[in-house]
Image: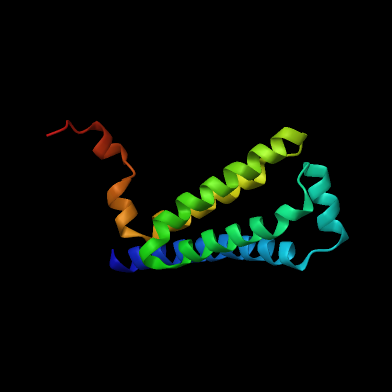
Amino acid sequence: MAAAAGKIVWVGRVLSGLASCVFALSAFMKLKGGPDLAQGMAHLGMPESMVLPVAILEIACLVIYLIPATSILGAILLTGYLGGAICTHWRVGDPFFIPIALGVVVWLGLHLREDRLKRLIPLRTRDSATEPAP
């Protein structure tokens, strides 16, 4: 059973690492700039002056997520960041399922690797759902 738990933790770490890479790449592309970024910001109705603050916010949330002691707070902050992305894309009529999926991966990866979160938000099984409360 311990080996299975160890594998689950590693799956969580891989999922968290993949989500982190997406956020890091996104922040890097914002910091790099370029004509595609300017065109994308104009399409979303955001001024180019917002690129640097948004990139700094994204990096800050990511760093908080990557520090084990603050990972739950980081997931909450990243969820808020993704909520803004969803609203921004929804407002202009763009597909917004990718930020939703990324948020699910952030939380799934954290839930699989973080015991504190498992105690805070336990997933029920069929057996525990049918048992009477004490």
